[in-house]
Image (cartoon, rainbow, N blue to C red):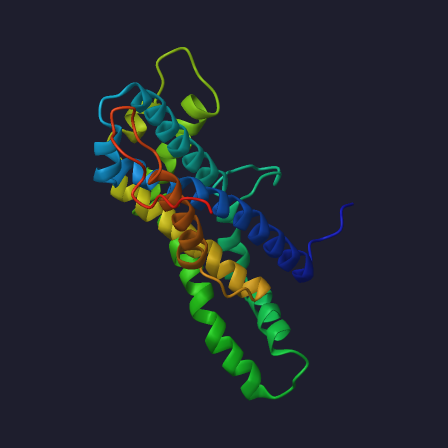
Length: 241
């Protein structure tokens, strides 16, 4: 007979999930921040114009968006065998009072002072509640369920596989707006950030610190990209000495 799962096992599973989610989140950020100028930078669009180079630009733009969506939806994978990253399972673990109490005890250390544990609980409880709330938003019955379910269907039927017969992918995402995808992206980053803080004590911001780094990289890459019809060197060209 298999041994029962202990609270310690549950916490280790949370820590493993948090690190796996971090890997996928950082990948999604890298693709997303590199993609955004291709969608919203009007000056970049002007430089590309209707040139031959614009065709390759559109391919890169599509590939970046595709890979961002794949990385994002991997965080929300569903697998009954527990062999994939399942951020939805985090909700059930954090709703378990024994698991949360163990997390509080861990960060409170060996101190027996009741005030220390109460203070730690007051600090951690809002993070726990917010994670549960955001995950619930994208579960069945939540306001964002159609977004994640539509993207999951798109991944299954078009991005990761390609079904020859008519599929539900187009219908599932037909009404999904860029704003809804952006909200889903930001909410997912917030879940991962809070989970990393809760179980690992990490304090950096994915949507701030990490995104800022990749946004900086993207700025210097795209300002040097132009179609063959654009005149002159990039705006920030500096001759090497």
